[in-house]
Length: 324
Image (cartoon, rainbow, N blue to C red; front, side, top):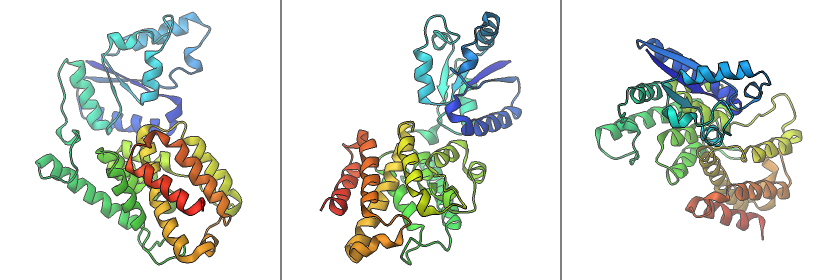
C-alpha cells in the first residue's frame, strides 16, 4: 500500500475541488493507493492549543510515503516551519512533488517517487511546442484542440467598437505567452483566459476537457464581472481587485496577465490612433486617466518581467498612449 499525502493551501480553495476530484478519480484506476488530504495547511487547524490534536495531525502526516504540494507558496512556508511545528523538517524525510500537471500525471509521478523510481514524462519536458518529435506532435494536436475549443466558445463575438472577431485577442495573448514560457498549460490558459468571463463555458467545462491545472490558471485570471450590476459603476472596483490579486499570483499566472494586457494595449494604441479621444467612448469607463492608472499600475506590478520584450513593449505602449 502506498500512502500519498496531498497538502492544500486555503489560498487555493476553489482549485482544491479540482485537485481532490481528479486525484480520487485517478486513484480508483490503480491498486493499493491510499490518499490523505491535508486542507487548510498552516491555518488555524495547525495552531491548536490542544497538544493531542496537533500530535494526531503530525502522526497522520508521518504516514505518507510521498507528498503532493499544491503550490510554490505553500512549499516555501513548509520549508520555513519552526522546529516545534507539525511540518517541521517533514520535507527532509518524505519525498514531495509540486502540483504542476494534471491529476493523472502527478499521481503517477508520486507513485514512482514513493517506490524510489524516476518518472520522466516526455511530453511535459521543456521543448518547442511546434517542432516535429512524436511528443511535440502530441503537443501540437493538444494545442489545435484547444484552439478549436476557444474558437467555439468565442464564436460570434467581436471586439468592442469594431467588427474584428474576438478570437483574435486570445490567440494573440497565447502567442505573446509563447515568448515568455514553453509551458503549454500556460499557453493554452492564455488562449482560454476570457472564456469563463465572457462565454457560457465554465471552469468545470475547461477542467473536463483540458485538466485541472489549465482550469485553475483560467480561473485565477477570470474577473468577477458582477453580473446584474452597472458595469460602469463597478469598473474601478473590478480593476482594483485585479491589481490587488497580482500580489498573490504565481509567476505562471502573471505571465497570462502580462500577455493579456499587452494584447489589449496593442489594440488600445491602434484604436486611439484611429479615433483620437472618441476612442474612450466605447468603454464602460470613459475617462482616459482611469485607463492610464490601470495599465500603469498593472505594468508596475509586473515589473519582475521588465527584462522581457513583452513587458518593455507594454511599457512603451502605455507611454505612447497615456504620457503625451
